[in-house]
Length: 237
Image (cartoon, rainbow, N blue to C red):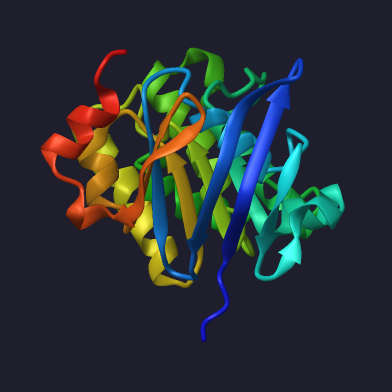
């Protein structure tokens, strides 16, 4: 049996004594991508933050290739997981320098001239912007630069991305979706939270729908998630 890349068992996260994520279990295998869907406040970002070790678990377990994520050091987790939050921190860097930061967990302070930086810039249509300050770019261009910092990670086994398609036009969403598919084809796994439903469903294998912090849909194969199921997931009330 193939060992799961990511395995969550009855995950629970509380804030001020109140559960904000409860009874979440899932398995993602090498080469698979999972989309977490739900309304604002459903617990999507909380789940991703918990997987990345940014929030402590109240109960349950999270394992990466069988290793307890809570027991991993910050450095070890950074070597295995490449992540991007919903609102990346603004940094006074050029695009080239920002992308090169993604090499740090494995190579330390790698030079911004590293060939891997240009390769991922070309992948996300940033090659002509490498020496531009991030602050002078559009929101969509900045988003792709932040994503490139994640995708350049040379050894990540799990990519965790919160709203990777936000701020991007349709063509650039396709670029990012293709980048995700290339990484799963190479054996990594992907976990995303997304509101762009069609793009998310097209580039993932599994869907987990959350309502008020609890599973309301799946985990289920993306191909089985039809409009009625999505309507129930996003219905008000």
